[in-house]
Amino acid sequence: MLLDLHTHILPDCDDGAKSVKISLELLKMMKSQGITNVVATPHFYPDSDTIDGFKARVSSALGKLEKVKPKDFPEILIGCELFYFRNISKSEYIKDFTINNSHYILLEPNPYFIDKIFMDEILYLKNDLGLIPIIPHIERYNKAKGFKTFLNFIKENKILTQVNCASFFDRAYNRTIKTLFEKRLVTFIATDSHSMNRPPMMGLALCEIENRFSPQAKQIILHNLNSLLNDITNKEQTDEIEQFKYL
Ligand SMILES: [Fe+2]
Image (tube, rainbow, N blue to C red; front, side, top):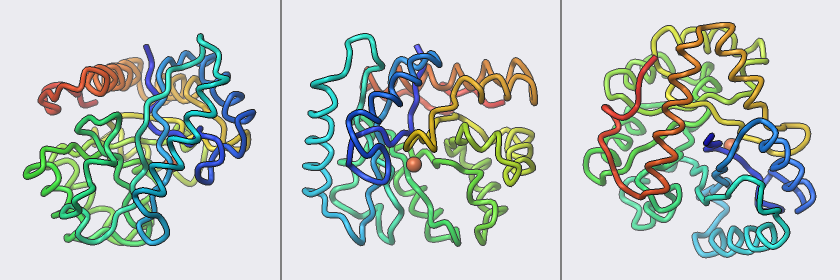
């Protein structure tokens, strides 16, 4: 079993797949890379979306795709890539954004600055609400104000992170990814697939981790993805610190 926890494969739902045909092409590529379960994580932007509008959009897109998806294609679970907003931890709807109604939530930071208020809210989500935030494409914040402090915060509080598969092949992230692996700050990788221009690269990324870092690093990522898949499908919360291995 292999999980892709961050994708934009639902047709015409956000800036991802523009049609059912493209969704199917992406799923076919994922299948060929060994992916068995895919979380669809459409963007939710608090400034332009409403909860009801978002839910309706997701459910309609999923319905269209499920109708034509071959049985042997990866199974689709629903999540969200939730863009951070102030007082997010106090939102009465926060649990509506979790991955497959589990405790995990993919929380996208502001790309320009990461401040103490954001980090305090992460801790509130975790410690007071029992949610488990995952920071998507952590490498992409390498130019954000406060990135170094954020990395220390992640280490100290064992916050879960995800690196995009495509970023292993983008020189702009080479150094950051090296630091993230050396400091043992990478929990997961995911494809963040959008289209044939931003296709799934899970297979290539796993090879790259093995070659650039070590076979153990790859095994740990696979272990973590498997643990997450078990957790989100059984809907049981386990102690994530024990459960996820660090590099
Ligand atoms: Fe994304």
